[in-house]
Image (cartoon, rainbow, N blue to C red; front, side, top):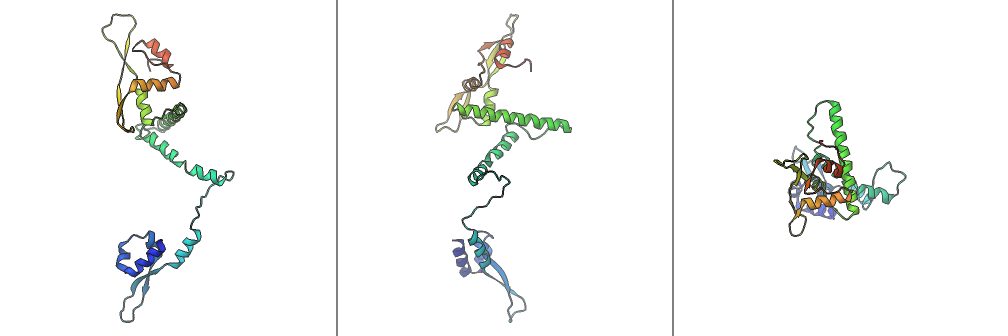
Length: 222
């Protein structure tokens, strides 16, 4: 089709050819210089590039890949190629959600440590996404971070008690634009659903530091 279009462009004149980009049908036209006995300067004209056409038509319909994976079949190699978007997605998540860049540390040891933490965080995020998919739950990396940050507690002031009490707080609603009709979801409910998948008990409305430590399996304060 491009070859036929190139022949039409030839009949339309050089003005149309010069106005087009050197791609598509334009690639099959080449500029040559022609001597005119009536003029001292050489004139330029276009002609069909048959050599390029023959080379293109010889490989038309074939798709070549260079790889070092000699033990894989052609189908497996092609399927691996189709999964390259996952690598690009990892870089996007690291740079945006996990804040790999910009880097606010200066020494080489601190920079290496910063990247190690970010890679570990990415591994945990991918593992969480995998386990959630097994339960039929699909969340983006941004959504998972927001859900994990939503269950927060605040100390209750003015309570005369030897044991300090904490009230569960945090964001209550989140818009879900991916749904057909945008609806709000309770962040705490969604967060508790995620916690249940990993065997973490949800925080009660009123709690203590000892209870938080026991439920989340962390040492407080952190």
